[in-house]
Image (tube, rainbow, N blue to C red):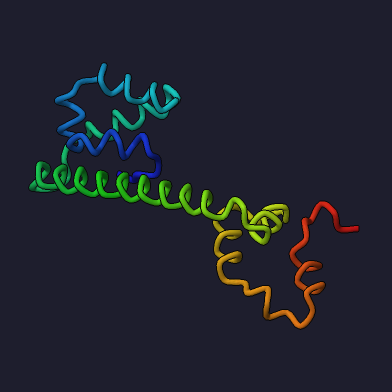
Length: 139
């Protein structure tokens, strides 16, 4: 089973395939609806999670999958909080704001560059301004 979406992780975090079966299809469908999952994807994942076990220890496998899914969800949540806090800290930074105007530069790249570029190292202040000025104003 390949987990590639937050809704799949949320479903597995409740106890793996055994947990899905115990919670029931109605609970599962409610979870999928909350995440905006299509009926096709919902039904395919339900069918996959109820396939006959392929190992000698399906309960142990479910415990491990459930544990890993919870850890991934927690890491995603922590990363989102970190990114939001970093964005708040840099929102008044001129370099950060200018970098965000360049196509292809998003908040992650802009924050990494803004915190690592020492504009004082440019020989002339105008060079730094020319390089970091908003993209939309360039001729």
